[in-house]
Image (tube, rainbow, N blue to C red; front, side, top):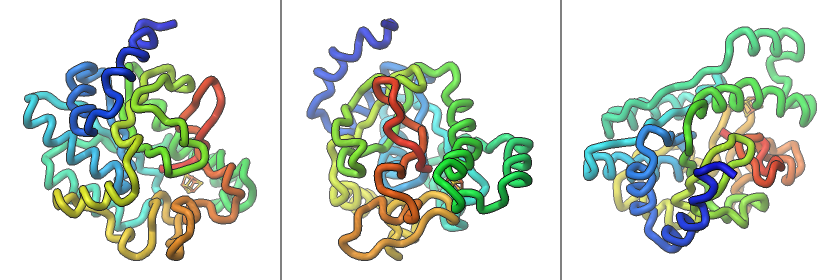
Length: 250
Ligand code: SF4
């Protein structure tokens, strides 16, 4: 067991039931530059960006933030990235996939390979998202994510702080117990910039080629990889007990 893992139980006990803002401040204070925040620019992540900016001003120190540019994002997402950087004055690092890996994959499997099979979709996510993510996480002790328990059947036991087996580091989820409604109440109350596609029925926004609007009442994940079965809709960004619990998202 690593030194970090030995602290997990205490951290979970201390942070249980604490407001998300307090958890963000704790993460900055505890880890400093050894933690990084992975933003997909989704609604939850915009809430966390707002909290990190406010905590940074209060504490006089911050945490690194990065996002993944798969090369297939919506124009609205790129604009949101610029607007967010401008509003908060944050230096958000943009991670790109390896050019040669993308070129080889596309030459062999086609530009829209993700529609041909689950395996090829995972290959595309692996090259465009997981490899850059792993590069961004290199040498970190922890990362912060905007996951919520009620987002997916694979996240119902999500804790505020847990060990990410696949990445060998601590994963901090300040919004783990927030509802969809709480997220949007915060965004409106704090005037947080958000992707205008959310107002057009897009609940979860990733690559333009793999994201669509959902109808009222449909599951939040129904707009992602809609041609696949629900239990396969993850992207390998999160592991638990050595098992893949999430195999594809932005
Ligand atoms: Fe490729 Fe679609 Fe995954 Fe984006 S979401 S990396 S386009 S398979």
